[in-house]
Every structure is written in structure tokens, then in C-alpha cells.
Image 1 (cartoon, helix red, strand yellow):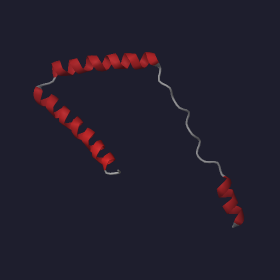
Image 2: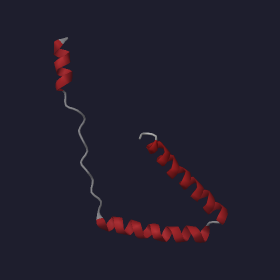
Image 3: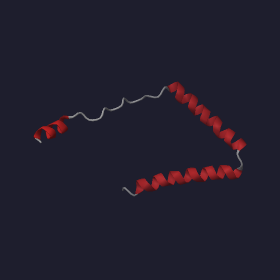
Image 4: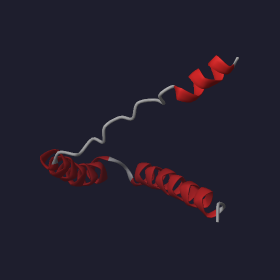
Length: 72
């Protein structure tokens, strides 16, 4: 029994993953694509569709906010 306790206590924990750094070139191109995508979305979708998307996004943001404020 003592052997099992010592073995469990001395086992190595899970290996940590290396921190991945973002490539600045990819970050800039993704940001530019996001700017273009917003304008394109506005041109293609109807007002009702845009309102629905905005409503869902707002609810998601407030849900995160409400969860964090209850921990204070």
C-alpha cells in the first residue's frame, strides 16, 4: 500500500503544451478579411437577418458579463 501511495505522489503530471505565438502577417490579413466581411454581410443580408445576428451576439456578450459579475 505504501508503494502505491509513493508511486502516485511521484508521478509526473500532464505535459503542458508550448505557448503558440501568432504570426503577425496572418493576424493582419485576418483582420483585413474581417473588415471586408462586415461590409459584405451588410450588403447581402436583410435588415431582419442583421438584427437577428446582432441580437444573438448581444445576448452572448451579456451572458458572459452576468456570469462574471456573480463571482464578485
